[in-house]
Length: 114
Image (tube, rainbow, N blue to C red):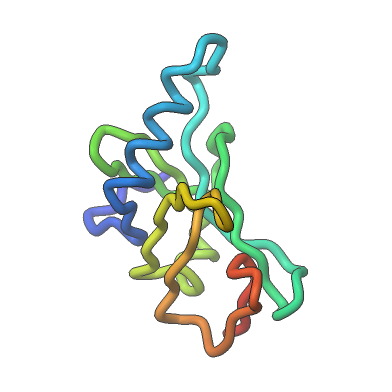
Protein backbone atom coordinates (compact mmCIF):
# COMPACT_ATOMS: atom_id res chain seq x y z
CA UNK A 1 0.00 0.00 0.00
CA UNK A 2 1.39 3.36 -1.07
CA UNK A 3 0.94 6.56 0.96
CA UNK A 4 -0.09 9.40 -1.33
CA UNK A 5 1.48 12.85 -0.97
CA UNK A 6 -1.50 14.56 -2.60
CA UNK A 7 -5.01 13.87 -1.38
CA UNK A 8 -6.89 12.53 -4.43
CA UNK A 9 -10.32 13.65 -3.15
CA UNK A 10 -11.43 16.49 -0.91
CA UNK A 11 -13.91 16.23 1.95
CA UNK A 12 -15.87 19.35 2.87
CA UNK A 13 -16.29 20.41 6.49
CA UNK A 14 -19.75 18.79 6.52
CA UNK A 15 -18.41 15.48 5.16
CA UNK A 16 -15.55 15.45 7.68
CA UNK A 17 -17.99 16.09 10.52
CA UNK A 18 -20.30 13.24 9.40
CA UNK A 19 -17.46 10.74 8.89
CA UNK A 20 -16.02 11.57 12.32
CA UNK A 21 -19.52 11.12 13.80
CA UNK A 22 -19.78 7.67 12.20
CA UNK A 23 -16.30 6.68 13.41
CA UNK A 24 -17.19 7.71 16.97
CA UNK A 25 -20.26 5.41 17.08
CA UNK A 26 -20.14 2.61 19.60
CA UNK A 27 -19.08 -0.65 17.98
CA UNK A 28 -17.19 0.97 15.09
CA UNK A 29 -14.40 -1.34 13.83
CA UNK A 30 -11.29 0.83 14.22
CA UNK A 31 -9.32 -1.45 11.86
CA UNK A 32 -11.35 -0.11 8.92
CA UNK A 33 -10.61 2.86 6.70
CA UNK A 34 -12.89 5.23 4.81
CA UNK A 35 -13.02 3.79 1.28
CA UNK A 36 -13.69 6.12 -1.63
CA UNK A 37 -14.15 4.49 -5.02
CA UNK A 38 -16.33 3.63 -7.98
CA UNK A 39 -18.14 0.59 -9.30
CA UNK A 40 -19.87 -0.18 -12.55
CA UNK A 41 -23.60 0.47 -12.71
CA UNK A 42 -26.07 3.25 -12.18
CA UNK A 43 -27.93 5.30 -14.77
CA UNK A 44 -24.78 6.88 -16.25
CA UNK A 45 -22.36 3.93 -16.16
CA UNK A 46 -20.44 4.29 -12.88
CA UNK A 47 -21.54 4.73 -9.28
CA UNK A 48 -19.64 6.31 -6.39
CA UNK A 49 -18.66 4.15 -3.42
CA UNK A 50 -18.08 5.57 0.04
CA UNK A 51 -17.99 3.46 3.17
CA UNK A 52 -15.75 1.73 5.66
CA UNK A 53 -13.60 -1.19 4.59
CA UNK A 54 -10.34 -3.02 5.20
CA UNK A 55 -7.39 -2.14 2.97
CA UNK A 56 -6.05 -4.50 0.34
CA UNK A 57 -2.92 -4.67 -1.79
CA UNK A 58 -4.36 -2.50 -4.60
CA UNK A 59 -5.18 0.41 -2.29
CA UNK A 60 -3.39 3.70 -1.80
CA UNK A 61 -3.64 5.43 1.57
CA UNK A 62 -4.27 9.11 2.29
CA UNK A 63 -5.45 11.11 5.27
CA UNK A 64 -7.94 13.97 5.53
CA UNK A 65 -8.25 15.86 8.84
CA UNK A 66 -7.18 12.77 10.82
CA UNK A 67 -9.48 10.43 8.84
CA UNK A 68 -7.60 7.43 7.41
CA UNK A 69 -8.78 6.87 3.82
CA UNK A 70 -8.11 4.28 1.12
CA UNK A 71 -8.71 4.30 -2.62
CA UNK A 72 -8.06 1.60 -5.19
CA UNK A 73 -5.15 2.74 -7.39
CA UNK A 74 -7.23 2.24 -10.55
CA UNK A 75 -10.03 4.51 -9.26
CA UNK A 76 -7.86 7.62 -8.87
CA UNK A 77 -8.17 8.28 -12.62
CA UNK A 78 -11.97 8.69 -12.21
CA UNK A 79 -11.98 10.52 -8.88
CA UNK A 80 -8.95 12.85 -8.86
CA UNK A 81 -9.84 16.26 -7.37
CA UNK A 82 -13.42 15.23 -6.58
CA UNK A 83 -15.17 16.96 -3.68
CA UNK A 84 -17.37 14.98 -1.28
CA UNK A 85 -19.94 16.86 0.78
CA UNK A 86 -22.56 15.88 3.36
CA UNK A 87 -26.05 17.30 2.80
CA UNK A 88 -28.45 17.58 5.72
CA UNK A 89 -31.52 19.01 3.97
CA UNK A 90 -35.17 17.94 3.97
CA UNK A 91 -35.11 16.79 0.35
CA UNK A 92 -31.55 15.50 0.21
CA UNK A 93 -29.67 13.84 3.06
CA UNK A 94 -26.40 12.05 2.43
CA UNK A 95 -23.07 12.34 0.70
CA UNK A 96 -22.91 14.29 -2.55
CA UNK A 97 -20.13 14.26 -5.13
CA UNK A 98 -18.71 17.06 -7.28
CA UNK A 99 -16.47 15.34 -9.82
CA UNK A 100 -14.53 17.39 -12.40
CA UNK A 101 -13.74 14.16 -14.32
CA UNK A 102 -17.38 13.29 -15.02
CA UNK A 103 -18.57 14.03 -18.56
CA UNK A 104 -22.18 13.63 -17.41
CA UNK A 105 -24.02 12.84 -14.19
CA UNK A 106 -27.37 11.32 -13.35
CA UNK A 107 -30.15 13.28 -11.70
CA UNK A 108 -29.65 11.25 -8.52
CA UNK A 109 -26.08 12.58 -8.22
CA UNK A 110 -24.54 9.19 -7.40
CA UNK A 111 -23.98 8.00 -10.98
CA UNK A 112 -21.66 9.45 -13.63
CA UNK A 113 -19.97 8.84 -16.97
CA UNK A 114 -16.41 9.65 -18.02
